[in-house]
Structure formats: C-alpha cells, structure tokens
Image (cartoon, rainbow, N blue to C red; front, side):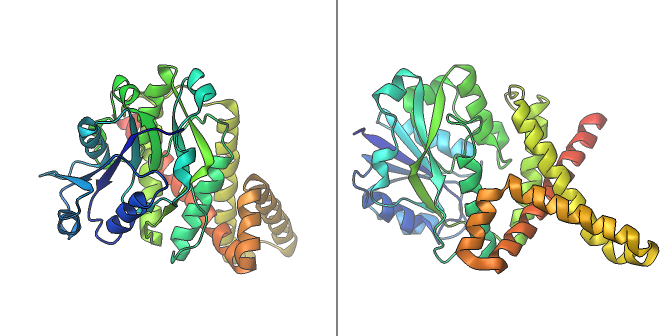
Length: 337
C-alpha cells in the first residue's frame, strides 16, 4: 500500500545509532514524508548530530520523560494519516516499507497497523544482543496473528486510531510494557495490529548480561502489576495456552537451574542412585525446554553450532529465573499494598 507516513523516533542518548536510522529511512524505497525525532533530554551528542539535518524535525524535551511521552509528542506534530514508530537503535532495510501497511482486506477487518519483526541477521552484535534479537524473532513468529501483545520497537498505525485509543500512557515513564498497555486499549476498541515477517527491522541495541537481567526483571514485574490492574489499563484475561506455556517454561527453567546449582552438594549428600534419578530428571526437563523453544534452538544450532546452542540455552534459562523472581517479588509487593 502506498501511504504517506511520518516516522517518529524517541531518542535518549542515541548518538551511536541515530544517524544510521535516519539515513536508512531516507534510503527507503518510499521514504517518510517527514521524520520527527523527539530528543528525550539526552546528555550526549544526539541533539548536535541531528540539528543540521534538513530532513529531520527535531523536538527537544527539557526533562527525560520516557519513550511513551516522546512518542505522543511526536505524533501530535505529525501531518500524515499514518505513523511509523521506530526506536532510535533500529534500522530499516530499503525494501521493507512495502509491507508496513495493511492491505484493503485487512483494513476491512479493523487491522489499523503492522508490527515489524526483529531481523535475525548478525551485524556486529555481541552475544547477548544477538541472542535477544533471535529470541524476539521466534517469540513473535510463534504468536497467533493478530497477536495479543505488541512490540513498539517498530510498528505503523493510523494516526486517528492512535489518538482515539489515547496514545501511550505517559505515567509509565521508563517502566517497560507501555506498548502492551497501549495495545490492550486498542484491542478493547476492536482494533488490531498484525505482524508481517516481511516488515523486518535491524535492532542494534547493545545489551550486556546486566542490562538483560535488569530489563527482564522490570518487565516481568510490570506485566504482573498490569494483570492485577495496578499499572495502566488492565489486560484482558490470559488465554489458556498462554498460561500453560508460561507455567511450563518458567517451572522447567527454574528446576533446571536449581538442579545445576545444587548438583555438587547433592553429590555429597545422596547415594549414586538418587543422582541418577536427578540426572534423568534434568535430561527430561532439558528436552521439554528444547521442545518449547524448538525453532529458536534449531536455528541457533544451524547458525553457530553447539557453542551457540549451549549459550542460548543457558541464557534462556537465566531469563526464566529472572522472570520468575520478578513475578514473585511483584506478588509480595501487591500483598503488602
């Protein structure tokens, strides 16, 4: 679909990636009619790098308010019917814009936008970044379409629908999952955003093990707070399949971790027969974990061999442990409220 659109970029300390994104937008088969960058009170050279680029309309915030506020600010300035929200650490390949808007039939079904899918190409990414991009790619592809969740890293939406649903909740600040909370409001008005695997984007967020753990912990807490109506618009009930997947994945990952950590101690305490039972349990749980994440682990093996498979397997278990910790902490906090 040939639609005029505005690219809206929330940016905070994005000096290392922002020019790559802006240049990729200008090189698109159909560039945006306007590019609005909302500098969320950056303390680096983000503002200086952009202020002389003619194609960019630069809005600078005096106070760091978070991506939701920045996106809303940019959307209010947009002149086009369609909006493309894209994070400052992303880039778009030149030909994908043709897949960024719903077709006529999809519009009849109240599809009001298209969500991009993380590209799994390795482009100067470290182990953690490469893992997370692959994990998100396969996570999105395993969802039904339209999905129950939204990733705001890269998506298009009709401007009038965006504001009809109230835009992003600005009270979230830097708390993650503001994108899903917005999407829950969208779904309740019977609007939908589909994902399209041909609308792919490159994600260059340089993650460390520390940031991975921190992000997962905060995200899992925000999800629980939202489910109990303590953070933004309460989500509709989880589907049975989603609850089952959560329970199996989190339980399996945590038991595997407990076994690995306690194995040396158990070796000293229990007779050999008990250790054999424990190892058989460990192998069974590993098989369950592999089946749940089959496509992701298969790709990891084909892409980087046994070393990448083991690395990704251990990182996936770590994420589940962190998510469970965040969930337990959230329940404790909610009980004390």
